[in-house]
Image 1: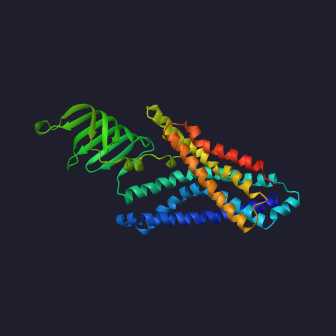
Image 2: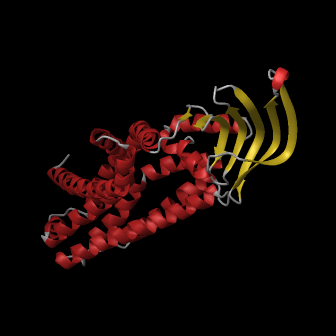
Length: 363
């Protein structure tokens, strides 16, 4: 690695670290003040609050790291322009593609790091953070296994759900257990599926078993219903908190989960979109770095005004990318786009824009 390579890498890492620490601090401060009432009401100790936010940090890093990398490149090239360092490099015969090669090498390493952080560390930490929030703050007794099953405890009731589809708010493979004050099973409801509509749960292909009274209390009366409203006490928002989330699984775990869900005939479109998004999002830094380099290497972007305009450019590009990325994912969740296309469309669009900008750079 040459002196120029080391210099650029050091400067990018320095400003990236400053941006990352600043943004994380602001995010955690805002998040803390939003949740402080919940922590106080739950009687959570300050130590547990700190642990909760420590577990949140890796997830936040993954979300904002591409933006920080983009801004770091813009600041480095902006300062090099301001100090006439790029002019000196041009005079010394250093081409724009030499600088681009160095920057892309750094971006490639960054993308690999981002993927492994999101795939190995985030699933562990975000799962622990969600558990603290759900069980210690919200006081919800729920268990989700590494499989599809959801077990959730209510007031003298227990619910077992095989699969929850967040997109259309439906549940499949439902079994509800109702107990008396001595925790004896009094009623059991089995349903093939349920849908939350008009503020109520409507179950289909339902079988109800009620314990008989008197001398026949060991027996159960069985009834069947094609469709029926059942007073299930958990709202879709509460099920969403305990349902298996894509960010709580590694890439291979998510792939296995999808195969298991689809093998039982359930729709796993949401998870397939998230599977492709795990790969697509890991290369965001590489794509955004092309856009940053294309702007930063322009001769016109000099002086303090050029630097501030460059930062504004970076924030604007990030905003446009995030809107496009989220919009395409929503189309994928709704089944309007195939999962692969939904996850990668924004990347392909901005990659093309970055290449066009680089081809028109006047270095």
